[in-house]
Length: 183
Image 1 (tube, helix red, strand yellow):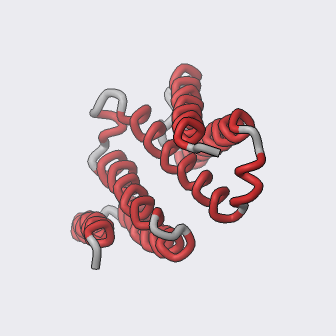
Image 2 (tube, one colour; image 1 turned 180 degrees about the vertical axis):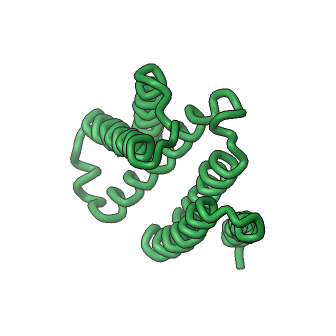
Image 3 (cartoon, helix red, strand yellow; image 1 turned 90 degrees about the vertical axis):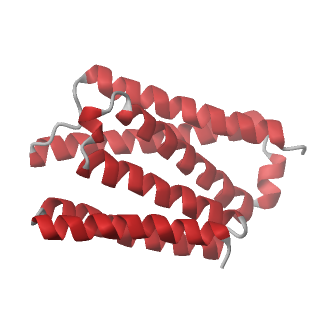
């Protein structure tokens, strides 16, 4: 087993420990979040390793790390409320992950097409992809606040900061890809 897979499994182990802790504390809300996180991380990891080729193991590690930071540290340990900038950091890293994953899928699924499309068009598409998924995230936060009385969205300023960070992450990934590509 290579180091990347070992790291991803270790991160899932951290999630499992958090799940056991939540069970012992009787925190059913955290049990649901962490249980879904373990399942999602394992499923996404399998898909990435199977379909993304050699890049998949790196994406698996990154996704497992994001799940640990977002759900274990962010929600269970309440970093969203106690660590300044935690929400912005999670938006940025998650958008980076999603933009890179989208590019890898595009390159693997349509290798000839991506070579023919002008680089600025790909940068624009990746940027819109990251921004669009950030918008969906914000809709999820709004829905949770409305339906479950959480407080993920703390006003328009917070929402706009998150979307601006998502936009920036898309631009960074798209520009890095365009700069790296020689065709």
